[in-house]
Length: 358
Image (tube, rainbow, N blue to C red; front, side, top):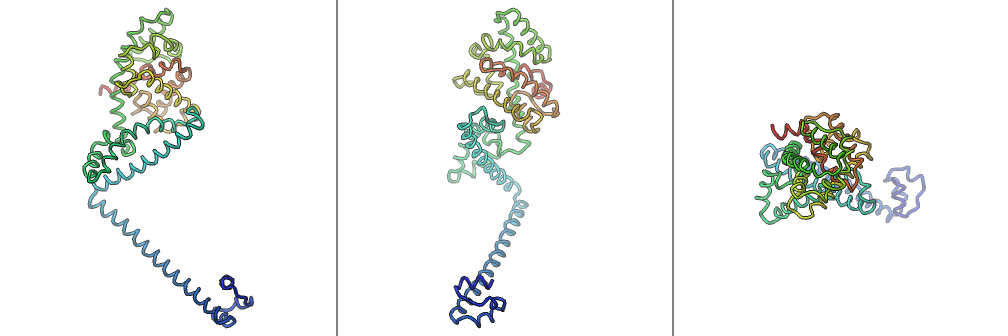
């Protein structure tokens, strides 16, 4: 330490002087340099005392905040729960929003076909979340409005808030409610598919497709190979997007949870079908269904029209594998087949019927 001080003072002292004590070392220095050394030493001692004092008070302040939070949780549990819901939810929403902009930037540089499954899922969900949450946050920012808006959002989270603000049970409950609404349109859509059977000109294809429809009507699901053999029906009339009747379009929009009164129905269905196709490709590129965690499997099944509740992980993987088998043969020209797969592969599934009728 003394050698460093000597350098700062720009003095020349014998090397042996630094092996002595400080007071002895001062005897060998001029009076002016000795005074400067005492000032530096005294300043260091004061700095050390100030630092210790700051550390002590900061530690006391941290303990005070922790104890205050525990006290508030005991005295006002409901209020603190509301605070945590909005605090954590806002942070999660801001994090997802930043990720969304990063994915948009990546999309422009590498293309949408090179995005991962998680990135495609974020591109699908985040715009809806922003549109849903923005009016709520803007209203809550008005003077005194938060005292009214925040409790309303807390008691009606499905209407006013997004998944970032929901707990695990709420996410499951709300997903089941949305899925039940979609399932109510399965039967009307199936009737539309049946009604178009007689419009098929090719006799062989008509008989093959009739077997597929009869299998569904008997309470079972057709084999994936039988569905693939009929994919040409979805390239032209009567099942291509351009050929579907208005009622058929409306029911198809409903089972995919899409707004039915907005214009450009066919284009929006085409975009949704291509999104599903890209997600299917991303699953394969990521190692297949066996690499997917349970939460991702459940979301994928909900998204494709099947209720995953009470299904084992193996059953979820097997069903999704069947979906991917059909999806691998689908192209843009017959994307309508992929949009009808919730009927072809999940119409008679036990979990769907249990949710709809029990």
